[in-house]
Structures are given as C-alpha cells and as structure tokens.
Image (tube, rainbow, N blue to C red; front, side, top):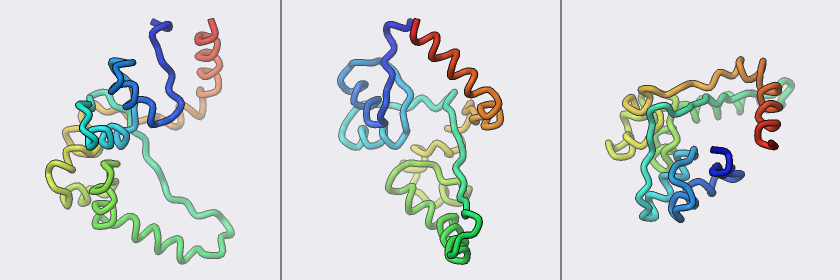
Length: 145
C-alpha cells in the first residue's frame, strides 16, 4: 500500500489531486472540498468515520484587554454570528442553534449537521498528548522503510 500513498502538505492539495485524478480518495478539510464543489468539481464528502476536533477560545494570562476578549468571545459564540460565518464556508458551528439558521442546503454541508455526525469520531486529545510522540516516531520509521 505504501507506494500508492500521496502525503499532502497543504490543504489545497487534496481537492486538486482528486480533480486531476491523481488520487481516488483522500482526507481533506471540508471547506476545501466545498470550494472545489462551488467551482464545479464533482467531489463528495463521506462523513461516516470522519474525524472531528474542537477549537477553543483562550485569553492569555496577564492580557491588557481581557474585557474586550470576553466581548469578542461572547459575540463570536452567538448562533447568529456563527451562522453568518458558516453561510460563507461550511465549517461547523458549535452553537446548536446556528445550524437551524442556515438554509437546508448549507446546513447539510456542515460537519456538525446531525446526520453528518453519525459515525464521526472525536479526536482524543489526551491520547495524543500521552502517545503522540511515540506514535510519530513509529510512523516515521515505517514511512522511511
């Protein structure tokens, strides 16, 4: 199998390779696939077995603008704000009410759309903190053989 694997290094590569016929399947950022679809490419996402991870807002200790940071987080976390963002690029909003504010076509493109979450796997951050370095070394040794 190893000789047939293409390792991508930039988010633009997977949809480009699919469109060119260089690969028959790949992992990819869903926003990149959506952009290729909007340009007329006949690409589809298989959501079952997809991986997802959560992002977080953080305020650096000792920041001078803590109140403004809290205001931004409050603003960015509102369903209306998240729906406006997700209407432009189908990255899943975390607020459950945001998807309901999208038109049905765009809502179905979200990784956080209920049907797309079925069979999705959460990245286990604690596992990767504990085992990531060891597994990366094992993987690199395998890849170098």
